[in-house]
Image (cartoon, rainbow, N blue to C red):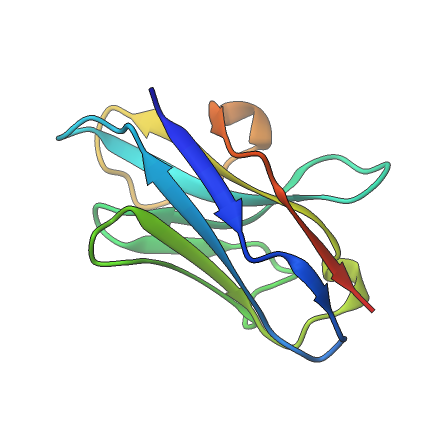
Length: 128
């Protein structure tokens, strides 16, 4: 079964940088999939932040982090990283790593949270 585990959250001063990691396991050999990072602040809907299609290496970002965030995958393809620079208080929230299987490799993995099936436990990020 597919499992995802996030790490790297914490309290960071505004203007600083943060790097979050997502360890992925259980994806069968040869399957295509998407990885997304989502953020949920108290009282708000879970919203996408950054996405990657590991096959072609295509990435996508929402406007609020565009130019500040970078999503990447390690060479072993088991670790996904989200780095956000120039952090702002509105970046605060619980960050989740998620995955969804696709029938083939696609370029744009940006989608609503409801379209993703597998989820990690989340890691809290607080910017002050």
